Image 1 (tube, rainbow, N blue to C red):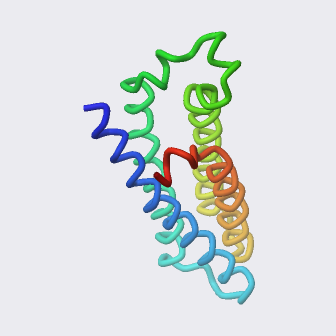
Image 2 (cartoon, rainbow, N blue to C red):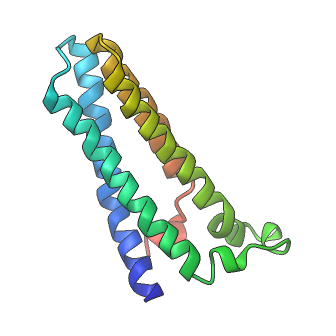
Length: 143
């Protein structure tokens, strides 16, 4: 079961990253072109947020099932960079990134000016995207 969750988490990561990039680019183009923020633009932002939240739920499952997750969290783990990445850095930074995506989307819904709505999405999604990329275990993910 753990292996299945890990494979699902790795597979979904591609889709989530694509969704966040799509939302980011769509909002950036909207802001730079000066167009009106429409229902379609709101849904584009929503796609990135929903995908990120689904990935979070699967990731929480992996964290509690995997021997590299919660059960590996100890003082010795902090001395090994790869163990620290899996047990602490990856989950913590990605939770922060998903919180930023949620804040950006929620903020965009409340704002009234189109440019500000687009800016909220592209800024928060962009920061979250960089955070996510910084904590992906590249050695394991690309193999």
